[in-house]
Length: 420
Image 1 (cartoon, rainbow, N blue to C red):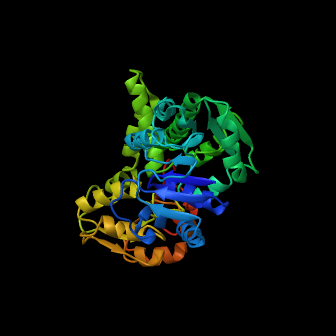
Image 2 (image 1 turned 135 degrees about the horizontal axis):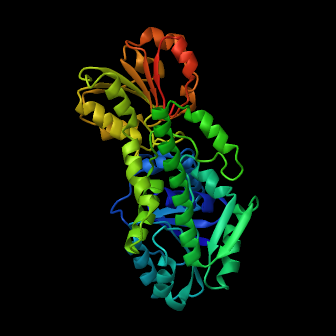
Image 3 (image 1 turned 90 degrees about the vertical axis):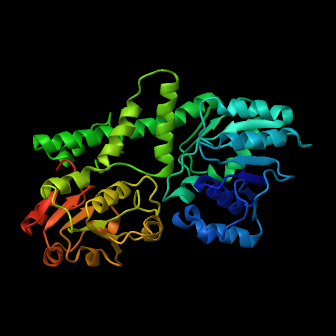
């Protein structure tokens, strides 16, 4: 099949790579670009594990090409993967396709715009083809696997004749499906927002519980186990921490909250989004309280700055708020992260209070506190005795509850977790 993929974000690049890998001839149309950067220079591509290598492989094979033209001819399938704020670009593609000579087009809308957006795109396309909605469920850090081996696929289809074409397109990725769910495009769009909102509410609720547990001297990790064992609740998205980040998740939650406001309805999501921004400052507040506000000239080590393990992205990451607060107090910040340092160096290009280290232990040498922000696997089992030797003050603030609290106390540490 000949496929055009439109967009310049993670979803577009992943779709292009995976569709080309299974034998399609794919052109990725980066409409917003006046000139093309090298793939290595595109942070979205560089930061996602295995994506750069897969794109280069498909380009070398000739199955994938790049083009900045709005609409390329000859393709019979058009895959829209724009960011939520780029609906005008999707509409531009539809207008151009509606004027083309081709008929029987299949348009896949993977953009999380709003409920009803797919029907609007269909109206703009007219009789030239069908528009099918597939929710963008990619998770940064495992996007290639999520696209290639999904556990479920939701198809929002308003015209029955589009189903055969959509099934054929997705056949290479549907062999291991637990569920293929068919619904109208409006229902599928609402389902995507509803799922994202529910996950955000769970995260917000468990963080709220953890903050209360701190005040009541209850260990939230024990409560978490009890809640997760209840089959009505389960353990997913039930780990407290110092806030969630990421570009897509944050954008979708905020977008859904905005839909409620447009309909003049009160929304839990608005409170969740606001509370999450406050939660990102939790570790700084604990540090401030420990030192009674006397933070100037302290040395604070931070382990983990990407918004979650498995990615180099720092989009909406809690670490950014924490670092900004520390710098404002004149704190010298020692940073270690296995992937995110290049992005941090670019973000804080002129900041003299920040230093970067090759190993976690080098970062804590001489530090007055260690803040664990992102739970990369290499941080879970540190040498506690060595930590006690090299740190200036034995203070650990664990933003993901990964350390052994009792063992740290045996080594003479002050330990603060999230609800522990």
